[in-house]
Image 1 (cartoon, rainbow, N blue to C red):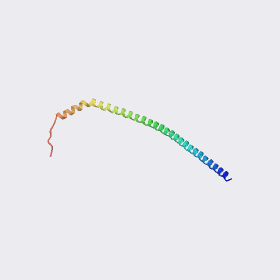
Image 2 (cartoon, one colour):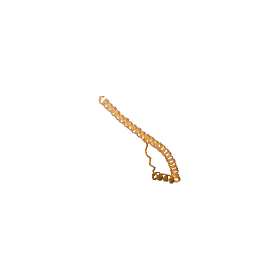
Image 3 (cartoon, rainbow, N blue to C red):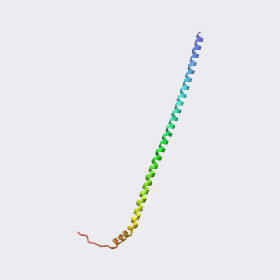
Image 4 (cartoon, helix red, strand yellow):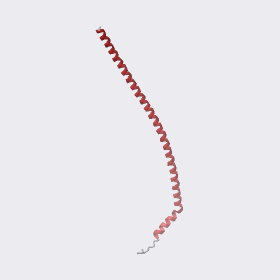
Length: 111
């Protein structure tokens, strides 16, 4: 009877080891599946945030372009005003400068 009990116990131990292997394989598979699912979620989140950033960047860039265009228009307008003022009174300014240089009137400083 002892040999038969011993064989039965050995069969039970072998079955238990086999069950542990199956459980371990299942746990490993679940961990791998969970890791793959997490990686997939991370990629989806990254893509979503990249799209949001690109949209934000496009909005900000368009605002900067508009501001730059407005600044260029203002600068051109001011430059035209300066050029017109120079055309109107440029000759008079040159004449005044030449007269101030050529018509020197020395004065003795007071002490």
